Image (cartoon, rainbow, N blue to C red; front, side, top):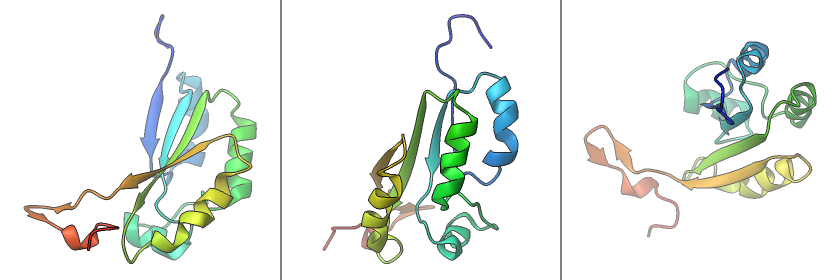
Length: 125
């Protein structure tokens, strides 16, 4: 902990969050941005290319918030991608409506290595 520092935040996909949160809390963490692009476990594993997280469980997120009241701010960032998760927007709203957190829907950045991927943009015709 550094004197005068008011916020220590981390952005994570949540894979190791439950395991690391106690140590992060002890180090002064008080804000978390969770990148969660889907509430469907199989889609989550496809997106992050590894076995998943249980953050798509409302009970797990609620328990995390209850056990770690040190958090000043918890936010979920969801990148909306055509053909992958655009059908889950209302599910995200429902998932977060009773939790003390914000959900942000973020525009997909159409870039893959050297080339733009405009066909993946939601709303582009």
